[in-house]
Length: 440
Ligand code: AMP
Ligand code: GLY
Image (cartoon, rainbow, N blue to C red; front, side, top):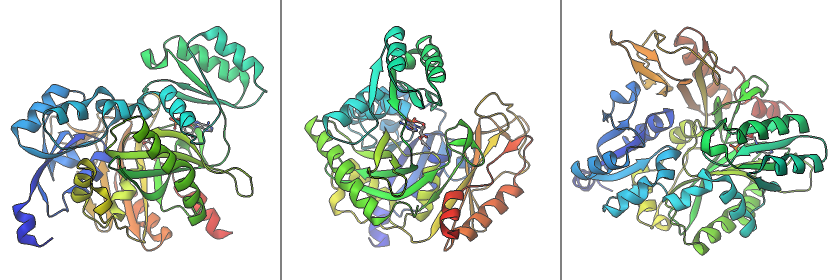
């Protein structure tokens, strides 16, 4: 599109959310010639420099809809799962707004694990064998009948990424069932899914969809565990790299045929209006084993930190892509990616994902771009002295891209070392699987 036309067709954009994911999305949206003023609700101090923040919470459906109408917002991008599950897309579209993000009924692919598992069963999407329980006695009896060994216990509803226990033994699985049903995750855990443990390598495959077609992005590998060597408790994600060599063209063909197409057919058959980002959490079978890839979970949104490596590699205009999704014309849209490698490292508060201190001063303002590195804010705030301080578990995601993985890692870790706050923690082994593959 030529500049003059683009200038005339600028639209105002609202991004809902305030994490590193939304920072990365807003950073990419801002590069579009179609992007007029960008608002973020509620945003974070890193976004304050490049966008206009509005103090509306992500779950304030009425407030956000009213704001978008008053400001004549031409595109609303919903980042987190909670507003999607609450029906923000439904409400905004009813008001005549253009929205990137699925309706609540379609977002149940993430907000209800029983719904997602039953959907996969109905449409032949490969997933771990499972049962759903709301009775403790029945769940424990089921575990007694399972062979001794790992089982996965999941709260049925949204639990801020904390509702899943990968139990190494029957006793541990029973404990997880008791805790969930006793209310550890509130209403989200009144029902539990118990599923078989699947071995393999996890890959996050995010995709754009307009409900008519699904276009996968590049494969990303997150690092869910807190500790190096993939040890310790599960977190929201401690870092990522993209692309992933284990996701070969052959695997991509299998995923397209056995997972993406049946999912699309299922959405259509059930009349689920899905226009947004659909995230396939995949488990690839260990090399040499017979089975194909399976779906561990769907998410109804972009992943965090996956987005922080995908956005630097996206060459096409994100505003155009998102509008094409929202307006059901994705087939005509070009989506091009850089052939470089991107990595990101999450800097977290010491103690996360358990208890941690907040209000710790960060020794610089952490601008988005320094040299070849990028920094996306998550749990940061501004204190009374106008200093940037920590305010959450995952504080800042540092990202970099380069022609080589090694150089991208070098740039990212170099920047990480320059950002200081007390008790800061990050993993030093991001992309270790990829590095090990290469050294073979
Ligand atoms: P979920 O929120 O369903 O993605 O689960 C969180 C994490 O638990 C996943 O990213 C996996 O690392 C792990 N997980 C979940 N389900 C399984 C499974 N069936 N087998 C092995 N690991 C699993
Ligand atoms: N990084 C995992 C997620 O966003 O769910």
